[in-house]
Length: 177
Image (cartoon, rainbow, N blue to C red; front, side, top):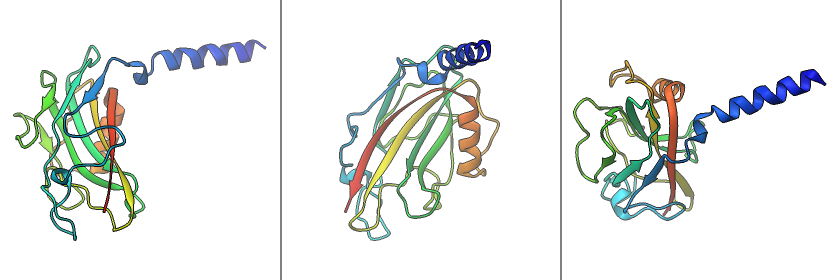
């Protein structure tokens, strides 16, 4: 009985201390919306797709105390690769930045990794014909700046972002052709 009580108390404390409790951290956009189809501007130009290949505007608020930097990722978990598809991975966005307008460069000090198309920066949606894919636009509030450069893999950067994330907020849009 005491063992169950200790386990329950430990579980409750862990849940209360969890980064997921940062409910004030929110991501908004005038370009994309939860569960809605991406615009042609956010579609890749190539691989049989015709679009603007432009990152949407993103704005966030309510980052937790202790945030030292942000990371922004766009990930397609439905890509038929066995490991999903990274459309964008940027980190070390300064803590005083709370928005990334569409079609603007990242702020000084931010690092962009090569996406799975092989180029640094945003790479738009381009699922196989007939498939609906989800595109997870996520902002992480980090308790540090990452000691990484632009040569690391998205997997390594993802590990470091998740290990240092104080909170995260997402919008999941969809696209099909």
